[in-house]
Image (cartoon, rainbow, N blue to C red; front, side, top):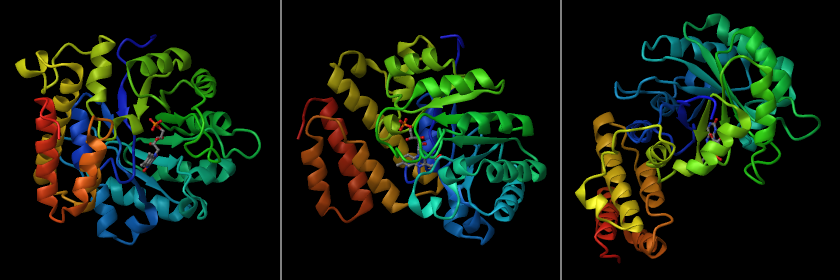
Length: 334
Ligand SMILES: Cc1cc2nc3c(=O)[nH]c(=O)nc-3n(C[C@H](O)[C@H](O)[C@H](O)COP(=O)(O)O)c2cc1C
C-alpha cells in the first residue's frame, strides 16, 4: 500500500446510510461518511423527508450530503440551500445511481452518457458553493466507450476536490465484478484524490484494491450493511489502528470467532438504537431494515428473521434482535 493511512469511506446507500448508521460507522472506524443520495428537486421543493436525509449531528464530522438531479438550475438551487447549513463540509454529487426512475430524468449515472451536461452541472454548482464539491461516478453507461476517465480529467480541471469511482457501468448495475483496473487508469490520470469503490468486503479485498488501483482510499458499501464493524476489523488486520474496538472486552477475548461476531454485532445494534434516539432519526422502516441486516450471515439468523414477521411493535423488534445477538454471543443460540 503506497498510502500508509488510506481513508475508509462508508458508501452513500439509500435506505442504509441514515444519520445514526453513519455515526455508528464512524465509531466503528470509518473515516468518512456520505449521506444517502437526495433529490435536488425534492430539496428545492422543501420536502421534509429529503431535508431529514441531509441532516447531521455534531458526532458526524465531516458532514457530506449527497445530491442528485437532472436539472442544472435545481442542482444549483439545492447547492445554495445546503450551503446555508454551516455544518456542511463538502457536497457530493451522484453520477452513479443506475435506478431507472433516476436515469429517466437525466440524473445519476445517465449523465455519464452526457459528459458536457455533467460538466456544466458541476461547474454551475461549484460556482455558487461555499464548500468544496466532490463526485461519485461509475465507469460509464455501458453503451459505447467508458466516459469516466475523460469526465474525471475535466472534473479536475473545473475544481472538483475528490472523486469516488465505482468500478462498474450503469448497464451492469451490481452484476459482475468491479473492474479495479479501470479505476487505476483514472487514479493515474488525475492529481486529486480518487477513492476506489466496488467489492471491498474485508482486509484482503481492501489491501488488494488499494494495491491494484493506487487509490487514495477505499469506499465500502454492501460489506458494511448490518456489519459496520468491518471498518475496525479491516484497519486492525492491516495494522492501521492500534486502539481496541469498543466491543473488545474480556468476554470477547475469551470467545470463539462466531461468538466474537455476535458480540461485535450486539454492540453495534445496541449503539444504532441508541443513536436513533440521540439524533431523533427513528424511522421505523429503517430500524426494521437494519435490525434484519444485523442478523444476516450468522448461524440461525434466517430462522430468527422468520420469527420477526409477527412482531408489529418496532421497540419490541429492536429488543428481540438485541436479545438474539446477546444470546448468540453466549452460545445460547435459538
Ligand atoms: C442499498 C444500496 C443503496 C445505494 N444507494 C446509493 C446512494 O444513495 N448514492 C450512491 O452514490 N450510491 C449508492 N449505492 C451504491 C454504493 O454507494 C456503492 O457504490 C456500491 O454498492 C458498490 O460498492 P460495494 O461493492 O462496496 O457495495 C447504493 C448501493 C446499495 C447496495
